[in-house]
Structures are given as structure tokens and as C-alpha cells.
Length: 111
Length: 114
Image (cartoon, rainbow over all chains, first blue to last red; front, side, top):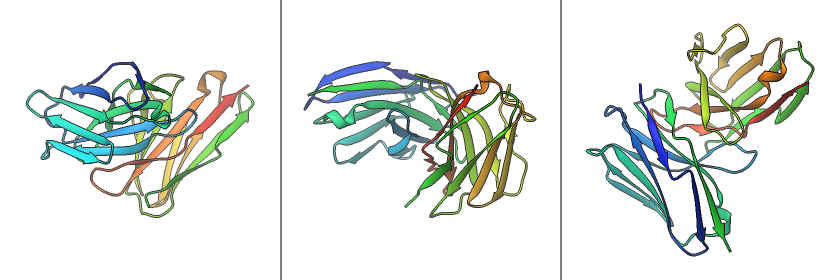
């Protein structure tokens, strides 16, 4: 089955700096890669996603890149703000199948 | 759009009783719903996949007789924890999807069994 590794497990940055979280996956058949933000006591919120036929996608301060050959994808957050502090999860999915999640990254943005 | 609700948001029950958690897609029809369990500071663990009108598919190691899932309509799925015990205490989260790809998560239900 699919296996997703996520790094780093914790990340601390100064407000205004950039943050990068990386994930690798094992199943080359996976074709959809979402990123979720989870705040304490809440459900995950989809913040950006990318499909396997695209190499990069951007939405304001958030971007995701995908390297299918190397089987890894990354989340980039620019101009970080304290409200970006949360746990971020990546996932890999094949079509409408079940998601395989990374272990999560706790991002802390220091004001 | 794409709002998923869960009810209740938190529940405390006594050991041996059953608890039902509802998951609703409010503004779209969900062909598939997923139920997850999450322990503190850990990732989401998939429990089962639920399709409207058919039996749920449980992940290995999940007791189907203990965690009863019913996907009665395209907007409602329920998870019933039967004969709950303290080790069932956890954060339960559902997700729903209508598209081939996107899934949207509910806010979660905190279950505490005393």
C-alpha cells in the first residue's frame, strides 16, 4: 500500500519568513495530493491540492510543487503570519480511494 | 461551499453504553464518506469508507461490530460506537466527497468514555 513520509515534524519560523514542508510517497499510482491545516480541537481544512498532471499550483501565499519522478511534493508558505501556526498534513490519494496521510508538521510562527 | 458538519461536537458517556455520531454534508451530495480516528498529536487513522446505500468497508484491525457505520443518504452518515470503553475515547472525524478527488472534513467529535 501507499506510504507517505512528512518532514519536518516541527517547524518554527519568524513572522514574515517562509516555511517549507516536504512529503514523499511510495505508490506511483497516486494522482492527487492535498494539504490540510488542522487547528487544535478542529477538523482538518483543505488549503491547497495538486493533481499529478500539474507541477505547481499557487494560491496567494501558499504554493504546492510536485515532482512525480522523485515522488515528492512540498508545501510552501510565504510571508508567514501567526495565524498560520497549526498542524499541517499532506496526503496521497489514488482516484477516489482512501487517503494516506503523513504524520503531520507542527508549524509555529513567532511574532 | 463544501461544508461538512458533525454532531455532537463532544460527548461524555459511561462505559458500556453506545454513542452515535452524525456526519452531514450541508451543501453537496456526498457519494463517499470516510471515518477517521485521531489520537493526540498523531495523524488521522482511517477506520472505514462508507458509500451511500452499501455496506461500509472497514480497515484492517477495526472491529465492524463495535463501530457501526450507516450511510443512509447522500448527505448523512452515522458512526455508532457500541459498548464503549475508556480505550475508545478519541477524536473522531468524518470527511465527505462528491468529486473524484476533493474531500472535506467535519469539525470532529471528541468522545470521552468514563
